[in-house]
Image (cartoon, rainbow, N blue to C red; front, side, top):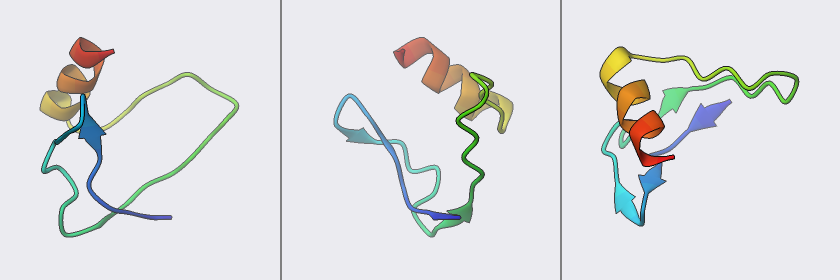
Length: 45
């Protein structure tokens, strides 16, 4: 799917401001992506 920017704590992460491809899989709790982005998300949650 096409994904736009996403927010953590109401603030833009700037990760997908121009849009990017994403995959949604409700059968797993795995979070994958560029290491700095995943680290930021894991820290926030």
